[in-house]
Image (cartoon, rainbow, N blue to C red; front, side):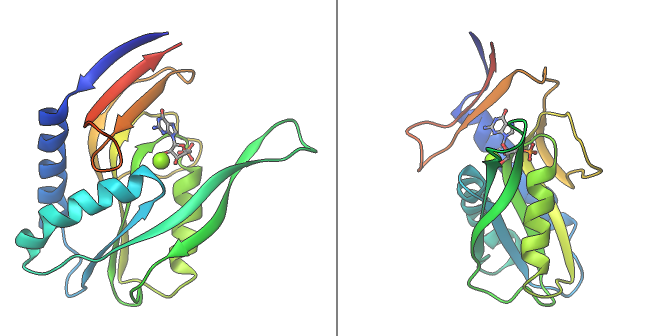
Length: 177
Ligand code: 5GP
Ligand code: MG
């Protein structure tokens, strides 16, 4: 197992600032901005972005959450697919600009489930995707509107994201097995 640190706390802070700037710049006209994080660390990243976005858009930016987990079918070939376990969205999505936020984008199947979960609640003015790290290997045609860091990875590699306050430190680490 080989680890290489891609960003430290300072580097992660810079990425979040840049992402917030890009989200604030490319707004969906006339629609209130709301973030929906994908549990677990997508919510942490969304909350950090919301604090940076508030002064840029001149108002509080509410954050909701969707919980999507990979479910393993005991009867199948050990294949896993994303299943919606719950939503905590305490605002109306109807007519809003919804920015989905996750820590790492991989095959895109989790994001697809998150889009379905949000759109089941109403019709947003627009839905965008912001991810801290895009590690490639998409299986469906889903691309981020805002990606903090694009990393070329092997399928077998992992990217470890740690972010305060859920973790004791801020860092992005690439792990090769
Ligand atoms: P998907 O394949 O659906 O894009 O990703 C599945 C889930 O696993 C998503 O929640 C995604 O954030 C997470 N994930 C995929 N690859 C990695 C990775 O290398 N590191 C981390 N931290 N999460 C990952
Ligand atoms: Mg994730």
